[in-house]
Image 1 (spheres, one colour):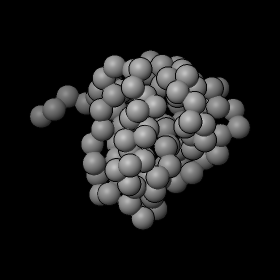
Image 2 (image 1 turned 180 degrees about the horizontal axis):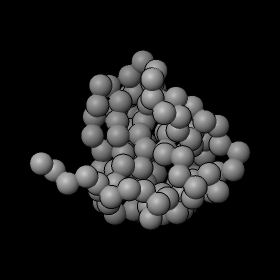
Image 3 (image 1 turned 90 degrees about the horizontal axis):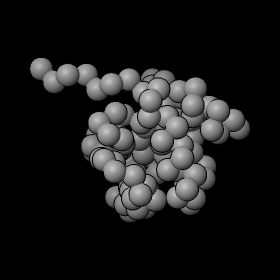
Length: 104
């Protein structure tokens, strides 16, 4: 099942206090970038983030879920209605995320 544009718009609105939030549509889902770094994505209308230590610490009870078959597990963000929570999560994760690969 593909993710809806409405859910993407909702998540982008929740993250509106952060600068440089961008996304890329990919096979019916959306990859979310924060200042050029991949932070997670929207898969089947679920916000999933990379399981870096900061995210694990920020959401100690988060469930691990697969974005799609054959993928690595990611953390499910349950509290998407809380703007302050999402902003804090993304800010805490940013420095642990790998830098984007240079384009060829």
